Image 1 (cartoon, protein in one colour):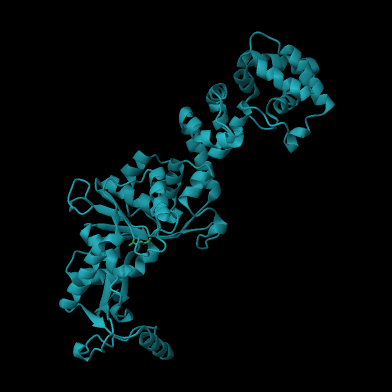
Image 2 (cartoon, protein in one colour):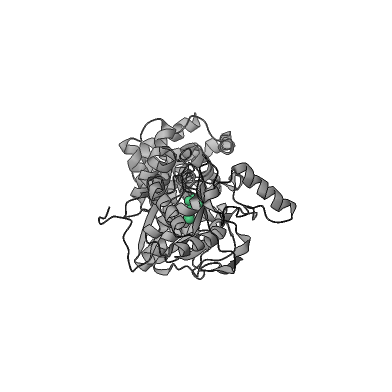
Length: 475
Ligand code: GLU
């Protein structure tokens, strides 16, 4: 297949890929790997490819694959090329395994799993790392047992060392004698991960492999297989994994693991991308980095080597920044599903209009889209009850103040500044501080003790609705 969106075309520009194995959701660490790949492609004018590593057919359900697509779409990290499904390329993988056998770089091994287990036991007993002992490596194939389907094993170099100049980790090396002859093709003819990955990366002309450092040790094996195939070895950049705030490997107890969960918690994709970018990559002291700046500045040497720590408070604050910077109309669209769920119906045109007009005040206070939606409920019919703190302002004195104010509010000029003047006058007449009048009024108008500016809320609600809410409060 060769067309303009074919993921199998060579280029003189970098080609990178994101290669998730479907697990049911897009892990937050994988989202960062995708982001780094995407940014590197954009920064260099190269290509960002997507390969779904779906050889584990049990886990790779349609839902699990769709979850990856929808999270990548939400984050804006989409490929312009056809998606490669690894499961469709198994014939090609096994072709390479057999070619390696023909070239003497791999061999058939007829040992049963039990025999291999025994070899491991023996190695352990001798204080060595458990491993296959190379029994069929140089053995005459004429001695093969009848009726046994062989596996294909890679003839791992036994002398010397394998060195990788990793663009993030620096120079890393392994003594070849520490590695045994790994399986490339299983007895049922299916390829192993190690083989599939390198064949696909080669066929997709991947120039830079940017992925989590949990794959660093695989890179030695992969480099050896590339060389045995006579192929160019791509550059490697292994990025440190994301840990929890306490430094332990990220798990559920540190916070949400799936990118989609952050969407549900009310995060904006641009905030999440900015946060994930800053997690382990820096550009001076810049905290807020737009996508276009990120594309301009992103590089691989700027990625730190230490594991990054997920800090929910920081991420939430950054989200607040992006909410304040977002277009009001866009925010209205984002809160709409939450409001519909809360109200059991979509907002009416009058409510929607109030929310849009109140958005400047609402977004000042919200750090997530959920908080924003909750704030916006002051412009929808209020629940019958008052929250716990608000109840403390439902006493006689508070009501007296609000009753006095109600009379003053029968003014034709129901605008922000006029309302402010009326309230100040009223507080003065009552000989109380403005706040002592404002809190009961806030409770009357919103049933809560926190809200946007009351002058703004009153102006947006209009006189009739304001007085109706006050009357219901006065009882
Ligand atoms: N499919 C692997 C994973 O999800 C990544 C393989 C690779 O990047 O080489 O961990």
